[in-house]
Length: 503
Image (cartoon, rainbow, N blue to C red):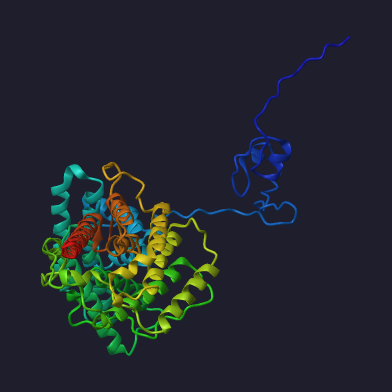
């Protein structure tokens, strides 16, 4: 009887490459070309190599692949020739962190593409990008090296200003584009270091250049950077300036968007398109508000001559002419005209028909700002500040939107300092929160909005949580103090009348 012996397997794994002859012999091929040495030494004919295999399909269908795109612009060129290690560090920080953070969930091309490409050819843009990258790293990530990196950032900021004076003026369009880029980057730089007056002046300068360019060309060209990239950003910043009451920075300029404004499709192709159309509508709203200030009613006697002495202290750095802010800068005039509410309803219909993912951060930001505009269109503030009382449910819903937004950071406690503050230059959350904190008269809802502002830990353009919180608290204190004085006066008059009746 023969015993079964399990023989070990000799040889390597099945050959999946090499020439046809070696694969048939199941031997390792050295893959020499045009004929392999293994076949030559064995005196065999090398039959060459099979063509590379094509992708197989199962069930006759194509195989699908999911490609995930990074939020940071990692495809940009990182290594620039002839720069120092420190410059490379700040440039890479801007490329990987600052650009992605400033653009936010809307994916603005300026920060992630246009600036980075231009920085390779224009020294002034390179210095501006390095300056902003160094300052932003210091702002949120290098708390132990604050002064060193601030000085380094300021050095490149000054170099960028010096180099912009040497630009070639032969190509007027390119020269204008570079200057507009510098205005935006300089505005972000000065806003980040708390120089709000300088930041506002850079924005006003950029708006003035765009207005003059539009007049000179008879309109901005379709497909140009000036219309597709710069115009939406300056409109957004102009809205913020108007909302914060800093219109003195806009002296000698006019609003960029005048009726008629951008057409609204039945459905938006992207959240970026929805944002741009919303910004143009918001610009129209602030413009109409500015025109209707004369329609406001006479203020209550106790507030007629009241001035925000404490509030002026915080707004002085924001106001280029250091004007005092009176009670009525915090009031919103009525929006007249039938076309704008109808247009806003069209925007809402297009937004709802777009079927965007509800959990998308950009969608939640737009929903929050949509709630703000819905309240604005629902009241007539020419009848006084008490008209806001009927909008209390809408105010509370707006705050619910903010708390549900994952980018708000508002679920963190105000004392939590581990997470670095965020810096954005897109449509954000601070304006709606400020709107609730200064318009809503319900004490609990107003304080809830202020707590959310305090805990957000973010900067949006010229807004940041510190300034927004201080102004909101000052407005609340003034209004509640005036209300208490008014109630005390009414109570005194009631007691006086009652006492006289008893006599």
